[in-house]
Length: 70
Image 1 (cartoon, rainbow, N blue to C red):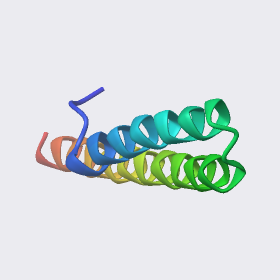
Image 2: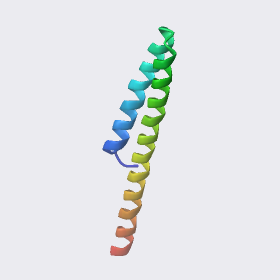
Image 3: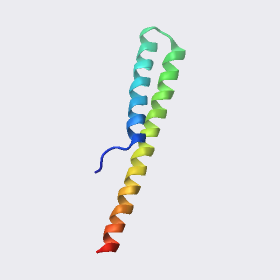
C-alpha cells in the first residue's frame, strides 16, 4: 500500500472537521449545524474513498507496467 494521495488526505481532514461541527451542533442543540456536519462528514468520507480508488488504480497500472517490462 502506497502513501495516501492529496484527495485522501483532504477527504480525511474534511471528515474530521465536519465531525467536530456535528458534535458542536449536538452540544448546542443546533439541529441544522448537526445536519450540516453530518452531510459534510459523509462528503469528506466520499472524497477520501475516491482518493483511495484513484491510488489503487495507479498502483495497479504500475504493477502492469512492471509485468510488461519483465
